[in-house]
Length: 260
Image (tube, rainbow, N blue to C red; front, side, top):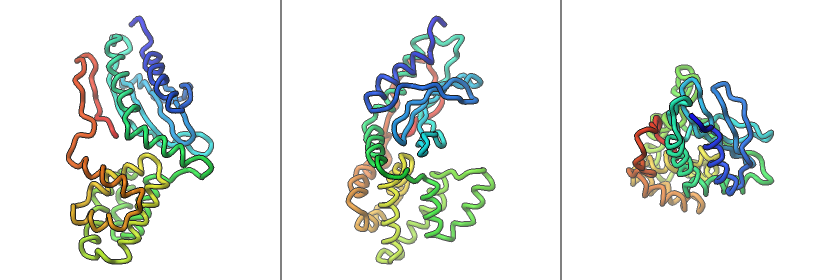
C-alpha cells in the first residue's frame, strides 16, 4: 500500500468537522490501535484503526468538564487491511463516514448541544434517564439489577424497550389523566432539553417512537413545545429506513450498521 489510509481518512473528516466547529484531529491513546480525536466543547468524534481486527471505526462521545471523553459510541465500522487495502477502499470508507457526520439530524443535534453547553454544567446521560424511569416504575428495579449482573453494564435501548416501554404503555392506557403521566411527560421534556446526544435520540426514537398511536396521543398533550416539535417528525420515521445504504464497491466491506 503506497499511501497512509489513516491519514487520508482523518484529513477528509477534518475538512468537514472543522467547518462544524470541531478541532483539528489530535492523536489519542487507544489500546486497540491508532486513533485521533476531533473535539468541540462537550462533544467529540474519533477515528480509530483497530489493528487486531483490521477495521476502521467512526465513534462519538460526550466530554466531561476536563475534556475527557466518556464511553465511545460506534457510528460505523469498516474492514480494512493495511497490507492489501487500496485507495478505492479508503475512499469508500471516507464517503460513508462523511455521510454520517454531514447528516442534517446529527449536525443539528451536535450544534444544539454545543449551544446549550456554553455557560452550563455538562448534560445528563442515558444511565441517569434509566435510573429516573426505574424510580418512577419500581417494578423494573430487579430487572435493572439483573441487567447489570449479567452484562456488566446497562444496554440502554434494549432495557428501555424490553422493560420500561411496557410499563409506560400500561400507564398511558390505564391512567391517562393521572399525575404520574404528567411526571413522565415532565421527565421526558427535561431529559430532551438537558440530555446528551445519545439520550436525546433515546427519548425521541426509542420512547416516543416506541409507543402505540393511542398512548402517544395521550402523552403528546402533556409534552413541552420543544419536545413536541421533535416528536412529530420522529413519529413519521417509524418503520422507515432513516439512512438507506448506498451501493458501494465490493472491495470495501461494511461490517456494522450505522447509528443515527
